[in-house]
Amino acid sequence: MGRKLRVGVIGGGIGGVALTGALAQRGIEVRVFERAPAFGEVGAGIQMTPNAAKVLRALGLADHLRRMGFLPQAIVGRNWRTARENFRTPLITECPKLYGADFYHIHRADLHAMLVSLVPESAATLSASCASVRNEGNTAVATFEDGSQFEADVIVGADGIHSVVRNQLFGKEAPRFTGHMCYRAVVPFEHVRPDFVSPDASFWMGPKGHVVTYYVRSGAAVNIVAVNETADWVEESWNAPSSRAELLKAFEGWHENLIKLFERTDSVFKWGLFDRDPMKTWSSGRITLLGDAAHPMLPFLSQGAAMAIEDGYVLAKSLDAHGQDIQSALRDYEAERLPRTSRVQLEARERGKTYHLPSPMAQFKRDLAYRLQAMVNPHASGIKANWVYEYDATAFSPKPAQHKQAA
Ligand code: FAD
Image (tube, rainbow, N blue to C red; front, top):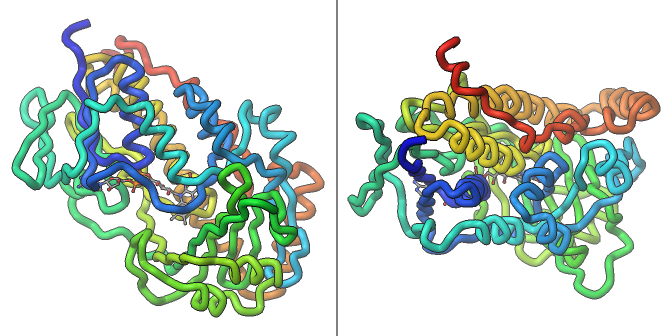
């Protein structure tokens, strides 16, 4: 089988730590380099849909997920002003039967921490900011801002939407501002759950905007994601501070249950939403990309982190199966992941348009279509993500070695 594989991962976000943990579990030598001085995630919620839950289960994290997560009853589409239900996609009773796993809401910090628990301490280097990467003979080399270098058989850029690794491989091109900006906040309800927040993933659809609310931390807090269309450019950052007053002003006239929730916010943040077009390839030589570095997307199908986790699992399995045959490993990884993530990128863009229809007539037609589709199949109505949830990254099987000669 030859000598042991050595992998370098640039970026310790959700995708980078998922890959590092999956490689470490397979006994592959791996080092993850994170530019921040400590691992961590921002204070916000995240939906871990059944496709992601299947991977987390395969990584041995099912108990963590059950303990930290919240199981919503349904995805419910609501009118922004009247709260009338436009669609209801049942989850809690249906997901295990339909997709083989539950649908969770979880706090990002809890998700990140459970993935970090898979990373051996010796595999993590913090305060390490990658400046460049290059292919050199039979190795890939990463250089860091302090001048140090790391050589490996493969280097993976998991360094997010502004990826240095991507810029190095494919040229520098700024991500596209999508014309959406987003407020986020988490409101704690430690003792009593509020009667104005239902235990669902609620999608409130209005003209030129939508709001998603759901419980996290086993029901002890509510996450808010409130999206507005705007021509104004907002810095692409999790940490641009906003305020309760700004949030209330942006969603003036929306349903009283939302306003009651917004009135209870304490720290509110805002940021612009960016994406990129799907790529034709993610790899060059012994260097490849994963997660937002490869396929940043709008959050309207709630899939960016889920895709990064799936990528990590598939890449680890492919590298494990192909050993030193890096080209075959990266070829199989891309063949499995690129078509799926490209479709999710493009459909997420489309969802933005349907969620935000400005004219009452267009909204009426959309809502009627939701109801008709739901009569046939509630899982193919609403956000129409059943095809996303069905996928099982753990079933991926790399092609046998002879495939390489045939190609
Ligand atoms: P990142 O999380 O961006 O991590 C990149 C890491 O690399 C960071 O830790 C960074 O510090 C590090 N880094 C960057 N540059 C360097 C460098 N040069 N050297 C070393 N380290 C570096 N996804 C879902 O699945 N479900 C959801 O419900 C969901 N909701 C969302 C809601 C909103 C409003 C938004 C904006 C996104 C949402 N997403 C959701 C998407 C998800 O947050 C991202 O797709 C996901 O975090 C991407 O993970 P990543 O590891 O690829 O990148």
